[in-house]
Image 1 (cartoon, rainbow, N blue to C red):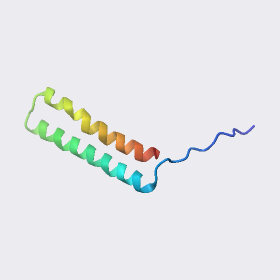
Image 2 (cartoon, one colour; image 1 turned 120 degrees about the horizontal axis):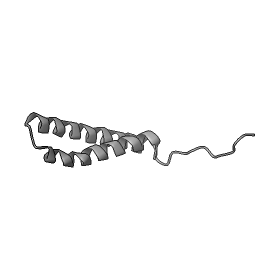
Image 3 (spheres, helix red, strand yellow; image 1 turned 180 degrees about the vertical axis):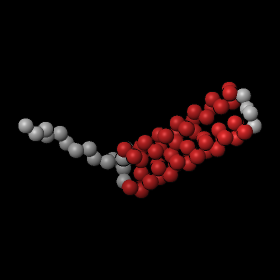
Image 4 (cartoon, rainbow, N blue to C red; image 1 turned 90 degrees about the horizontal axis):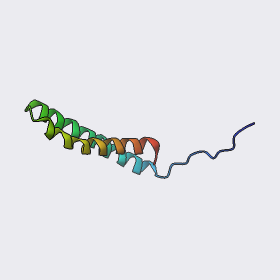
Length: 69
């Protein structure tokens, strides 16, 4: 008995996926660069908390590009 579920269809084109992927990689790169800078200057741990935002935006862009949403 075969399942007749519809196949998932991408709702964005290749151009938009590439844009989200580039934005995501840039966000992760910015987050990593700032994290390394804060580690290098021995900044307090509290200052590293806002790094959540560039890492979140970067991961969101990469995951959206990968899942074609």
